Image 1 (cartoon, rainbow, N blue to C red):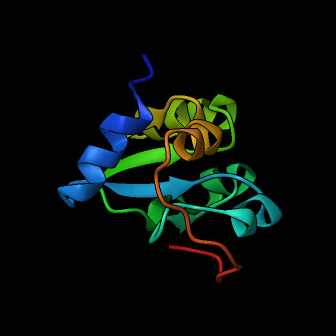
Image 2: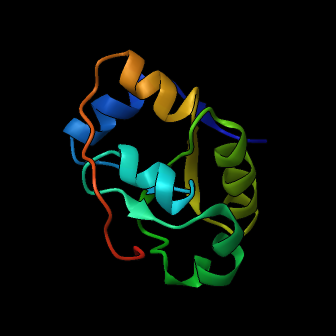
Length: 109
């Protein structure tokens, strides 16, 4: 079962510093706007780099609309990680007025 949260729940967890965001979109999508401090790990890379994630963290997985984050969340949950898929993804995050950072960064994690 995939655990999901709303963007407002994810923003609350972020403000309490009890969440790490994991962005599974493409590099171009990430560059157009992402949650500040989010780890960048495109969906196709998740199975190859999941071992780099900490099992002591709670990860809020985000994509553009929620489909890719659900896939990544399912994979990571099955691997024993504490993960939540952010409903509506970055589209919902931005529509709710939550802040974003733009620009490219190195491949996260």
